[in-house]
Amino acid sequence: MKIVVIGGTGLIGSKVVDLLKQQNHDAIAAAPSTGVDTITGEGLADVMVGTDIVVDVSNSPSFEEKAATDFFWTAGKNITAAEVAAGVRHHIALSVVGTDRLQDSGYFRAKLLQERHIKSAPIPYTLVHATQFFEFLRAIAQFSVIDGAVRLPPVQFQPMAAQDVARAIVDVALAAPLQGTIEVAGPEIFTLDEPVRRVLALDGDPRAVIADPAAPYFGIAVSDRSLAPDAGARLGTTSLDWWLANASTPPAR
Image (cartoon, rainbow, N blue to C red; front, side, top):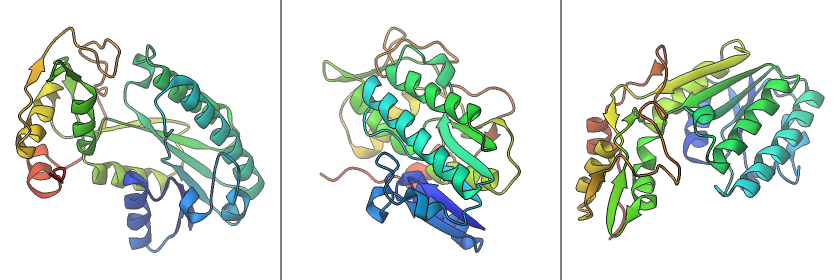
């Protein structure tokens, strides 16, 4: 089958493309660097010709509400129009566990708008809600520095490896559309501060990681279950210990 992966050169998209190619599918990485721009529409109609399935793992380059809203709304309309013209049979989009519970964030309001557009479009769809990736732990730390320390709310947190996210997306893409949402998460439950503390220790980063119930998560208040999947989520197999030992890449010094 021909499968177009929008955002196919990024962290998740490149892994999705590789896994699909290993199964002998015609997987196309669609991104501005490969001549496909979902905002301007450049190359979109051409790449969709003969496409059976579209996987969208692209993301807004900004977390600011207006920029993110403009990105998801414009890209969504352009993608849907190209899919309809090409007769695409299944649209898969990557989103975030807890999107509907994080609506104090302008970015997550934009993500919810993206999801609503997909649900209202004529293309059969499946939404994949993933927990945060191990690969994002350093960014969480960097965003959460207050007076030289990393302050994080000790809420439930079930992060997962990017490779496990990609495997889940491939499985969903090759199955029938759900017309609904599937959640995917890591195999272990922590509090948010724990894995961040461990990755900074691996890096030799001296900053303290403080569990602070009053601390925000990316600028918004969260409850104990805001970031956690519901019962029945599909679980990845990669443990944090294995990832730290084998896949984590400490920053250059």
